[in-house]
Length: 150
DNA sequence: CGCGGAATCT
DNA sequence: AGATTCCGCG
Image (cartoon, protein in one colour):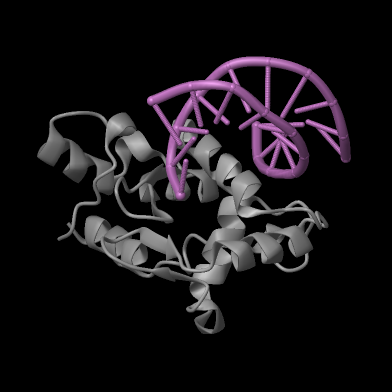
């Protein structure tokens, strides 16, 4: 139906829909995955971090630089990739990110979680997207990392 | 490198 | 809670 189509359009408008305006520019309360999205959104950082491979997959091309920029944002001058990657690893259980195994410095966003975090008002169980996803997977949304492409 | 426990910080 | 710091293991 038309409602489902509208939602799919929003889905593909990424990263605009995933952007959380309140915690964006110059905020010290910024979360790491917001920051990653922020860098990914900007052309000037394509040599440092960029979308690559599957939808939602990104590669940290310059880990030291990403860590340095993150350190500046959080006022943590001793930040490095070892520490930053530990924070990224905490996202695995939270289902925000997961690792693309075998590909160095490559991670993948779980988009359903991103939508859920940014739009808590959205009732995922009743949303047309997840009804469609249920139809495909035969299961309720919680364990699916696959983005259905229409 | 990538992982995850543990202690600690804000 | 969401990191930051440190570290031993594979």
